[in-house]
Image (cartoon, rainbow, N blue to C red):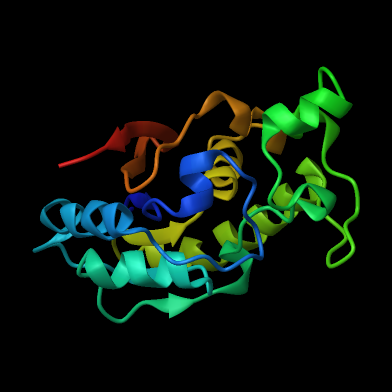
Length: 194
């Protein structure tokens, strides 16, 4: 059984400012491009059974700069749909809604998108994990995507509810590894940088 490698995209203007970024397709900052390049030594020389990336440019570009060739895009790797909170910081949300928590409260619908609940994101993560399971039987699989979604993938892979993704803080341009021990999924490495 191979390992599931998770790569969060490099820095964007909104990841730096803390704005929720789902469907807004921002490019990497120059620093984000350097971060993505720094992942190459952690990934080079390893064969992969499958490399998947979110269709958003920041993830595709991170994969390219990290040296991941042959990546396929998969719509299920899209970031959590933040609905009415797209482009808004948690601090600003708390001004209007003290105590709000993405992991338990979800998001309101927006003008351009309906938003997703933690359970909906969890179903998407489960669908993705079902897709990669056969490839894991052949070797390691790499997913290049977004912070909140990869945290949900981690929770679901470990058998936890989607809302428990809250336990796994994930920095930009980092490599994390989910493996197995005695036949059970385990967290083997988290937020690694070169």
